[in-house]
Image 1: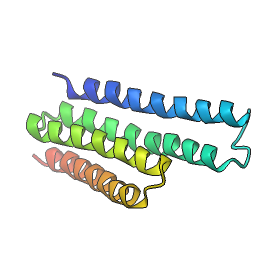
Image 2: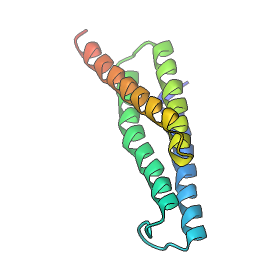
Image 3: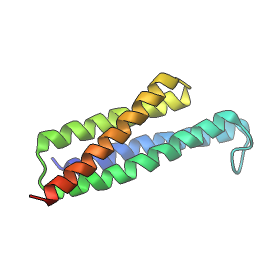
Image 4: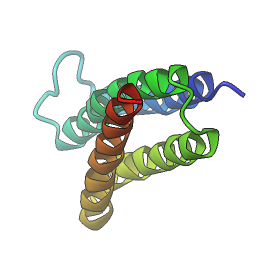
Length: 125
């Protein structure tokens, strides 16, 4: 199974759901452009943009790791962990659950750091 394709497909679903949430809040709040100083819309936009900020670079890292023939089990753990973490992060942001929000933010950064280090270690082989 191609983990990069799976990651992009599942991440695309998450990003689309978050975009749908932004549209839903815009329609409900009758806000055409920007955030209309609507706190719920600001949160929805933040959750959507934050997911893009983390998912796109991680997808590139997964692609490189796959091209470097990184251990499949290691990559599976990283991909599924990252997807779960990003889902929980979005939930934490949208529902203002600060503990989930903070923990998943740290875990996202840690996984991205591990992926980056693995890429560099693989280069030295």
